[in-house]
Amino acid sequence: MPAHRHFMLYKPYGYLSQFIRTETVRKNKKLLGELGSFPEGTMAIGRLDEHSEGLIFLTTDGMQSHIITSTKVEKEYYAQVDGKITLEALKKLQEGVEITVKKEQYLTLPGKAKIVSPIPIFEPRAKKIRDERHGATSWVSITIKEGKYRQVRKMTAAVGFPTLRLIRVRIGNVALGNLKSGESVEVESFDV
Picture 1 (cartoon, rainbow, N blue to C red):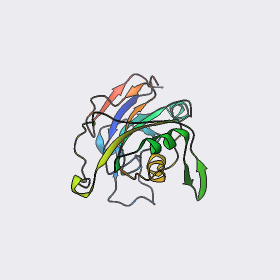
Picture 2 (cartoon, rainbow, N blue to C red):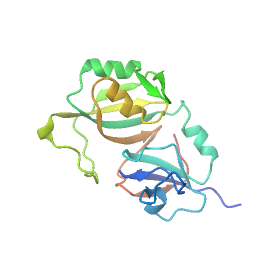
Picture 3 (cartoon, rainbow, N blue to C red):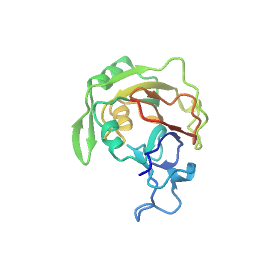
Picture 4 (tube, helix red, strand yellow):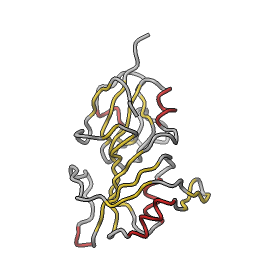
């Protein structure tokens, strides 16, 4: 049996975190498999929604998913939010906020949140983000150990600062580094 293969990928904006088209996926949606020549059976570990970008792991080893998506592994996101985020909002994000998950109220686990300074430099996104004429924005780093559907977006909205752009920059000890949007690199293992 051939050895499993593993990849780090910078998922671009507008792609779904899947390789196989299902009946629920419209034909015009872009899938991760379009970004490279990956071996048969490659799957994403965890997900980033269509409008989110950043680090995602790909593997042919389904057992890896359980380890990486567990609450033992931190995931760090940079969120560009609408407005100048306040210390009070950051404190709430750190303590946990109430969000809706599957139509029920859910209190997020405590995490880390801080202002990102200096402003991070990323490639421009495929779809333009509103410009500064519509008000100030700020960047915040949010580190969590869980991953509910659209959790970071729901968290920033719950404290009054909706997310405009969201990029996952780290999973455990593995950082996005110098990967460019849409670029992947094969790795020996995921040292999270």
